[in-house]
Image (cartoon, rainbow, N blue to C red; front, top):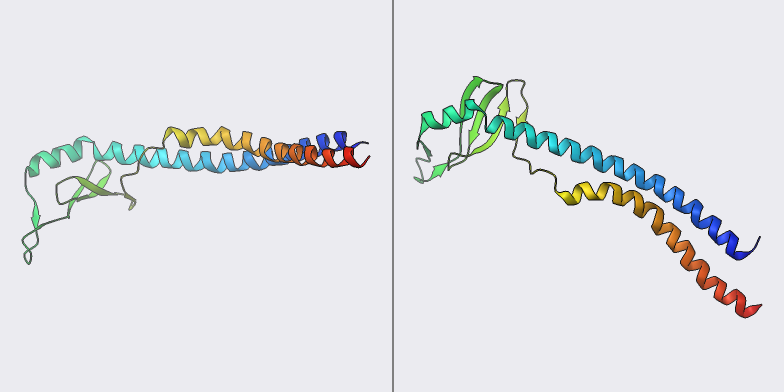
Length: 150
């Protein structure tokens, strides 16, 4: 076997191993993105639900004031309907977090960006091409020395 064929085979082997590792990273990233999307959707669904909107209208401009400083402060309100146990309001009457009837706390979570979705297939491709390209590059350099000596 010559250096060229050995380098090609080693590059393919390490490329496949890298692709497998890239697939594992892709799986972990996909799992994370799906969980983040679910948290975002659940919070948004409850924060924009009729229950929260009715409570916001009912309260109007009511705010909680700190008696020591006279400043607005965040506050909470027991609701116990529509799957929501407690609404935690910001000092400007926005929804800071929600406690559900099953005891979970939901916080505003940003939706996954397009870059996070793009990283999923990209890690698989990089997993193959980075080790494959590195072996090819090293083989190319070594081949230059071998030809010179031979």
